[in-house]
Length: 253
View: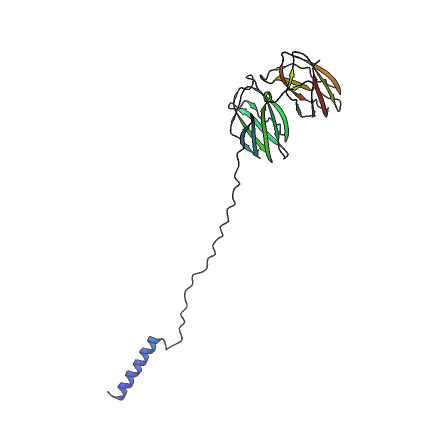
């Protein structure tokens, strides 16, 4: 092999090695391909929904006790014939509740929105019949309603007194009375602007007997009623408008 041929072979070999090793020409940079960062939209943490507690119904010593918080419908409970004392209390500003049977007969707003109070409920087979009743309440706080048979309360002896403010309903203790005249004396803190009323019911049957109304334009007076039979009774008093405050005394001579 001549010198010229040998030199050409060496030069060709160097060229091949340079190409294979990347040693010839400008330096090549290998840049890794990086996927763009995509910010994921944050998923909000779900806020737990407060559970609605159904009002509870319990029976204690013959009383039906319904308690709840704010709005709710209690399971039905049975009321038999008789007179019931319904009392309620709520530390909030209002409590409205209905007492109705399966046919929606009863009271759409038994409490008239008052946060506390007491009224009588007659299951007498005339307007309301024995059976299952529903209680649906609306309030801004916790509340409790107690339904108690009037004949389950030990009766008092006459005279009995009842006092309450204007716009409220006063309930007496059950009391024993004999057939004959009954006297109802009353006094108000201011002169009344309308008539007041005293309703007297037999605690066993819910039947009532007539009483003269508390006089309009009076600050004190006396009314009367005739008791039909010996028995145990209970009275419900409505103070006349404008009277502000009233006291009623029921007696027999």
